Length: 559
Image 1 (cartoon, rainbow, N blue to C red):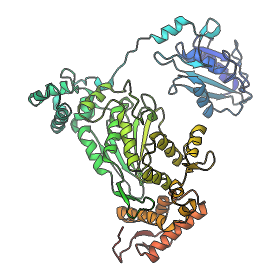
Image 2 (cartoon, helix red, strand yellow; image 1 turned 90 degrees about the horizontal axis):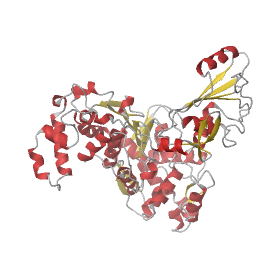
Image 3 (cartoon, helix red, strand yellow; image 1 turned 135 degrees about the vertical axis):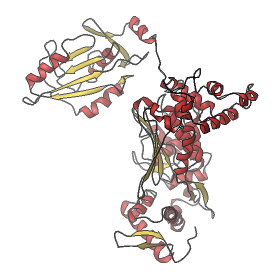
Image 4 (cartoon, rainbow, N blue to C red; image 1 turned 180 degrees about the vertical axis):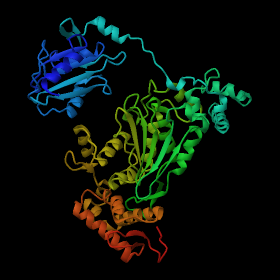
């Protein structure tokens, strides 16, 4: 739109300044976004959010709304300014806060409109470590009576999982799922005072006692965990989708009853043994690619914490080297890392009735131990820790690795099993190329656990330092080759064949950071040559560039 049209649009949508709307010139963003307390953008965001929410229009003249345009952006864009403001404006709701740009077609002037959500219940929004409000025509530090009003707001919580579904009855539940639920409930409460009575309960009594139904009413929880497949029309996209990616592709959808179908999902996941080679040991350590308990824990957490009102599937993606679990809705209480140690206990849940029922059926706990269980399992199996780094406000993404990323990290865990969990968590971030603080880096370097310069740290060859120096580690070619060859053989044994690029993806990121890219390519090429020509454990079929590698047909492969 041209400047006149934009002027008219702004006058129609933001006609006057009040507690819900501010106009500001802010032609220069260098000090306007985060500048003087009480007169910069973040102060206005705080003030407007602490009332009922509203809008801040910048690039316009105060009082007249005449368009002047933002003239110095100071490297700020619509894409990066939102993140910067959220970092400086504590407790502002990130999901609803957005920046809308307008550029006039004739004069090239830019106006930004900040759409500011109301503060979350009992949570004032702060800027410059103060909560702000608009009082008449002024922006002031929040008065005590307004602060008290926010802190003592009445919170009405609607639990979707506890809602009784109109028209649903016991006939819509799966008899096999009900029987299994009763067995699990009896096992959970076998030491309770009512344990002897459970066998005599009829179905309606059991379902009420297990907090699955409410006074006989069929809840969303009952349909999710025990609902018959024919009753899925009561639920908005309640579905788990398993998907296999890579050279071989497949997928399958699983509907309720989730008490039964989680086992079916588990059975679709390929779980083969892996061999790890500790330094100076003749025998390999064998571990499964995935821990069954970890898979079920991750899947049950998705079910318990899914935001079902978003009508979204739970996704389980099986890749060559990892499992990826996704559920709708951001992490609900704190951050995933808060629960790695097992000391944090969540105080609230997205689906309280559902989580309570799943506890009764021994599917989850509500003490925050689930993430710790997965973390300790991955550590004991010498694999990377559970990774939530790809999560955002709209979804939780959990990656469970089924392979080694950095052999130095894995060998450190193999030979130094007394490393504190916090240290292991830092090393895990290093091997995943995720940032760590300067203090953390200094701590790891002091212990001789990392090398390299910021930000390119990598796990040190610590094992070699205890057995004759780093040179011994670098020279130990035959030992390293056995590890890489075994990975290739396992891959071909599992999938039947693989392209050169697929094998390269499998091997290259596991090679030592002491090698540059050219050296890694050479080492990979030498591995294939040795296995096909000297060892004769693999062979190639097809053309030079499009052929596929497979296990040798001339002899049995032993590994």
